[in-house]
Length: 111
Length: 251
Image (cartoon, helix red, strand yellow):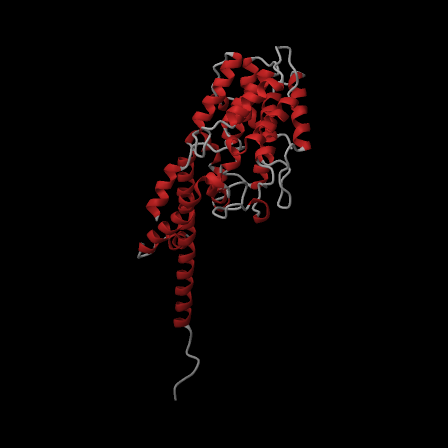
């Protein structure tokens, strides 16, 4: 069980693409603020729900900028976590398939 | 791009509004004083009217459209826009004032909310809180939600100088709904020219800062009543939980 969990949560060997994923997702969430200003907040709230809702109690005390920053941080973390899980699931499945194929008896004997 | 986006965080204003603070607090304060309310009560009611834009759960931006409609675009839906002088908003405001007069201690929160949403029926008329090209598209530069797609980075309807006649009509409608109190009354005919002059002042050009607009109304209040009133978000946030409970329990 522990081994499976380790496999599932294992960071990728080449983490460069994860950095790209962080950069892209942060830009997707934050970039439109540069164009639409605070109006983007209406879409931002919906896209990042339930994190935007969960952190809403801090909105008044932190101010808008910190609130948005915190939501982005948690949401990006969540997205990365999901990406890593999916990536590892695919990897584990491929290894399982490969092992199963290798272990299969030959189906035909060469004459 | 990422750096630009990060930098844009710094540009997000710390508060967002419907009609802005100059109207929701200072004009409402003036109107309450004109109807004979004392300075303390006027400050409380007008303060909670403005606090709707500042409270974490009632502010208009980081919310689902249904909540935005409840506090800023009353009776709007995907297929219906907000209507000026909305009958339900009028009735709700009357009820809130009746409760307040009857001595309900939580009525000041609801009266503030109802004052806010009623004023917004004027500034938000023809808009809906929901995503709608049909109702909300104007300048075609921003998202069609609320009045985001208007001039002045989506703030055009909120600023009284863009439609001073409508702002004066909103003030008159509020004035007529506020019940008379025992203090000295100021007739509408006496304050209308002052408001018209303040909203439509030649200096009220695009981008005029909120501080300057507030100063103009403060001068009006000081001239007529001698009050030096100031809205402070922190002051009303002290009653945040009571406010949220009072407005959250209502439909």
